[in-house]
Image (cartoon, rainbow, N blue to C red):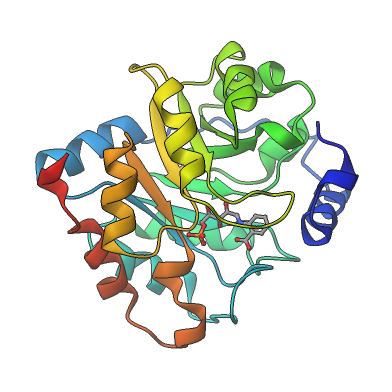
Length: 261
Ligand SMILES: O=C(O)c1ccccc1NCC(=O)[C@H](O)[C@H](O)COP(=O)(O)O
């Protein structure tokens, strides 16, 4: 767990809110999850770059807010060729909700990731999803939380930002790793982050490039660096664009050089 003084104020506020957010101590979910690695293999087989498109109404770094219905957004992303959907469930800084995730998961036939800042086991039981994000920097006992996540049937997507965090994730048994190009200390994005960490990820581990991917050239760059899939929010949501076409935004990334890798 990181020191709060090393975090951007917006991230410290996100973390404080996450610690205060209630979980569900009365129930333990049992999820029948769709496999992300299988979905990635399916996309590769029909020539799509595997893109996990994110329903992200807003964020501390977004240029605005999109109030579109999350189900319509997710369906538009799938129409554009998305391999999986990520749904923000964090309410106070990203405009998300667990209810939105439930509706999206009922409406689409691809794996759905719960994107939140989960810090305790009871918070796992708030809503069903196929994948669940765990951020190494924010979790005290990663191995225990990975175990608890798998016991419920979720696939844990374990997020790292540097090689030390990668080692922590691998030692804790992670088999799906996300390398976040966004530094949560300064909120700056640098695609070199993925390029420096990805070569150290074992071949049998699925590795996802996260954040700051905004063009087909960025997609190709991350694929050349070894990304099995890409997690993209802002460039698809295009918050400043208001009613920008989410299907087109997804499709131009999905079509970006699937055969080059
Ligand atoms: O996106 C933010 O502004 C943000 C701020 C503070 C903590 C986390 C943040 N984002 C979480 C994410 O991981 C991204 O939503 C995801 O990787 C997609 O990134 P992008 O394509 O750059 O929207």
